[in-house]
Length: 313
Ligand code: BDR
Ligand code: CA
Image 1 (tube, rainbow, N blue to C red):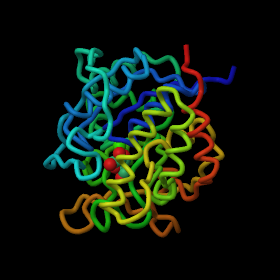
Image 2: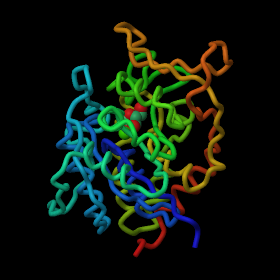
Image 3: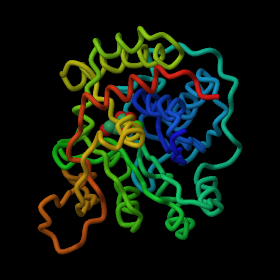
Image 4: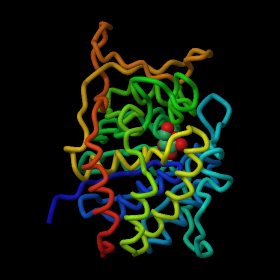
C-alpha cells in the first residue's frame, strides 16, 4: 500500500476544482482530511453547495466547512462567465442532503493544524482568503504546514486581466500574506495549467469508462470546454486545479524552479500579477517553487487512471 499524503483542500468549485475533489477522493495516495470552501468562482454559498453535491455524488463523508464569503480587502469578484450561474453549470445532481459542518473554515483550519502531529499539505485551488486569514489569526500554524501547494499566478500573462491570474486577482492581499509567510509554497500557475487542455476527445474517452467519477467528469467538462472556448477562443478548457492533485499523485508530472514571487497589490493594470524572479535579478531570496514545465501526457494518464479507479472504501 503506498504511503498516503494527508491534505486539507481549500477550494471554490468551479468545474476544475470539482475534478480536483474527485481525484483527491479517488486516489489511494491521498488522505483528504477535510475540504474548506472560499468565495471565488461563485459566491461562497454556491461554491459550498457544489462541494457538497460532488461529495454526496461520490458517497463521501468528508467534512466540508464554509469559509470567507469575500476577499480580505477588495470587492468580491466571481467567474460565472466560465462556471455558470451555479458555479457548476451543466450538471444535474440528486437533491442535496449532505450539509456543511457548523463551524467557520478558518477556525477549523487553525484548530486542525494546531492539533496535527505531522506536517499537513495545504492544497489551495481558489483565492487564498481562508489560508491568509488562518495565518493571521494563528501564526503558529505555519510550523504545522508542510507545504502550501496552490493553483494560481503566472510567470507570463494573466487570464482575467492581461497581468493577473484569476485566483490571485480575486484576493491579491491574501496571496501576498501566503507568499511572505515563510512556509514552503509551491505555485502551479497558468504557465503549466494552460497546457493541461481538456478537449472533447479526452472527456469523451474518460466518460466512456463509466462509473460515478468518470461520468461526472464528462458532464462537467462538456460544459466547461464550451464556456472556455467562448471566453478564450481556444478549443477545449484548461484543467487548472487538478494539476496540483495530479502532482501529489505523480511528482514526475511537473518541474519546479525556486524563485521570488511578489504579488502586485498596487491599484492599476498589474493588480494581482505574480512577479516571478525566474532569473534571480532581485536581491531577496526565493520564497516559492514555481512550476515551469508539465508532462502533459503523463498528467492525462494520472487523471484518467485516478478517476476510473474503484471507489475507496
Ligand atoms: C483558476 O481560476 C478559477 O476559475 C479556476 O477554478 C482556477 O482555480 C484558474 O485561473
Ligand atoms: Ca479554483
